[in-house]
Image 1 (cartoon, rainbow, N blue to C red):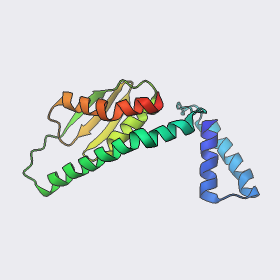
Image 2: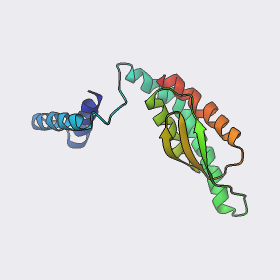
Image 3: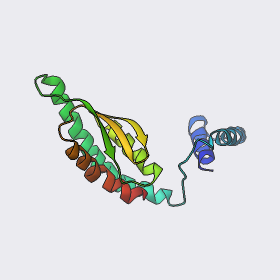
Image 4: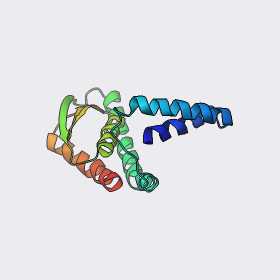
Length: 155
């Protein structure tokens, strides 16, 4: 049902609203939802609008601050090639239980400059970091900055 509604809303955003578009949009959304339902594991519920508001108030400001700090760090590293770099791959465990919250965490890591989420398996996220100094510090950074707020929003 959530794939159908998401597809239909996206259809109206792209094409506009008219009766002919309504009929075609319903048909296309129904076909898309039937084809992709076995691949779709994240379910939306009636609390989604409340979660969106909580996301905007609780998580987004923290994410924006961390993204600006990471941008400044990466800019300093680009402008000053003498700064030490130690790029590497890190496996970070998460305590988040829901698929949606783990997906948001992995995407938040990827959107932060200097990091790239490579894979998400169970409760582990595999991340490439531009400067891996202390693994415990990186895990603490993720759990304190992102996980806490995502848990409040999604779980």
